[in-house]
Length: 592
Image (cartoon, rainbow, N blue to C red):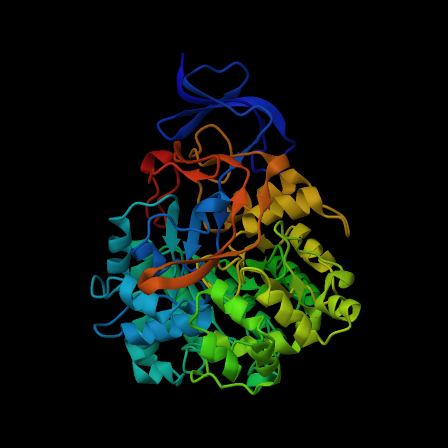
């Protein structure tokens, strides 16, 4: 018997965490039908010397707008992702009452740093108002991968409460009942989760905390119960104090202990799994340990808590195409509209250099804009690092701008300025933030290997000029498995499991995440030795000419989605087999 397609002699890393082995893998009608030696196929793909693994499942993305105009879905597409989950952090674009798009765009632009102009032009506003209608719109489209959507708390609150919701007024009993019903209907229609943000760092572009930030225990409990009423899903939360105490904005309202107790109580009462952001941050560098211990303890008593951790530090980028320490200097603003290479040349003029370095700043008009982070980028130059072409995400202190400035005998600002202005202006620096408080990634390693955590927080599709972490699925192999020099590495089989079957099990994606007979044929074939993540490059390819940073990635020999090859040697094949993945629809591949 000949199969439709056989991947020959690859090193099978099956997603379960079991030891790898060399074997053939057969695919028929989009499903894995055999794993064994000497399989024959109508088409045979030579995978010898390559890793054959399940397609990555990224549970923390923000393609809610991009998925309505784009079928490629980069940066996830270039990084081996075959299933993504969007609608995280409580922001999204459904429900959207008629004429409500301005509010939802302001929220998304403020929280996730996606240009409002791109969202206004790219999203086909008016095609839906309810969440089920939004899902139906997505279901009519095709993609390079499967996508799944969650109900965002901010949009839900605005749809039901209007201005009261935006002002974070307490919801009435009637408000809560209506929101619960809408969550139930959305889940019945295929939403895979409900999400909220409770940190005041997440603000609209005007600087107001997003709707739901201060939601009561009753409101959150009832809305998660609505998800259970609709068939169940995942409750995803960015908790108060999860990324710091936010004293710069007046301080968080709730303590982390209060937040974790709330999540545990909701999970126990509703029976729903809860995943929540868990990071190492500067205000309490070891608080994550207590969070993981609390989750273990509560799970032994009936809760279902899944701390969601990052696999690399969140790096705030400085580059002329995006934000940087001098982006609001008066003299710089006079040349800011020049093409980047011309701007860099102008910045090297001694008079302009002296003026920019001594200038005052022009304040950003929008209080919630990420552009305001120029102040942080400048104050933290000494802790920032230049990015080489192949990015090292665990640099040592002697690679920092503090060391570079001392070596040159110049100020920190001069060192950064000259770096940004060099050459064609495409140099990029990064400030490792959460996850790098102690100057290394050892705490991140401990979080990753903890059996109770899940991996996410890459924010693919968001923070397009500030953070470029959509490539974390690839970094998880290059850094943690192959290249780390400043500490212990992580076994390949474990790291693959963490970003495939582990995430599939959390979201109930029962037909994928594992290379096994009967499972959906979502597969990556990887040239592990030559897998690399390069320095971010600016692309003006969003609607309305919006700019974003993308990282070139190499080493994906092939990616298959439902047995259809979507990538070949790091290039797009043009195939679009991906569809909307609705909840309760993955118990078998036949249901696809």
